Image 1 (cartoon, rainbow, N blue to C red):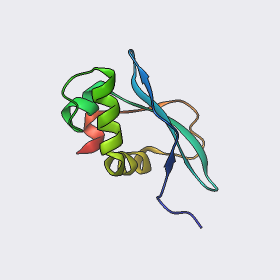
Image 2: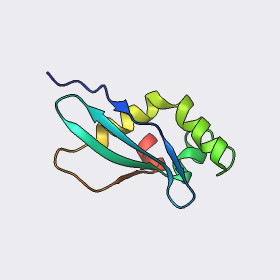
Image 3: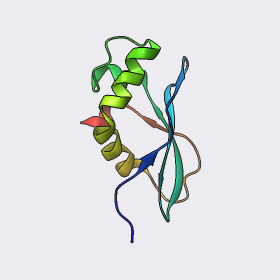
Length: 89
């Protein structure tokens, strides 16, 4: 039985990529994601690209991120998937 409910690993701040994390779903495996600075600031409410702001935006918007992850998580994709601002429209 597969649902759209994902679990996330702890987010990691990257000065280059934004917020790095993995999402997983029982029976389907793991996917690697990067939440872009653009998405964090424009769509999720981060005021700046500073560590505290983008991690807070990640923490407060897990439900929105889960929807974007569900739309992007494809079986067999092993490369990191970047979540851009357009993924939150």
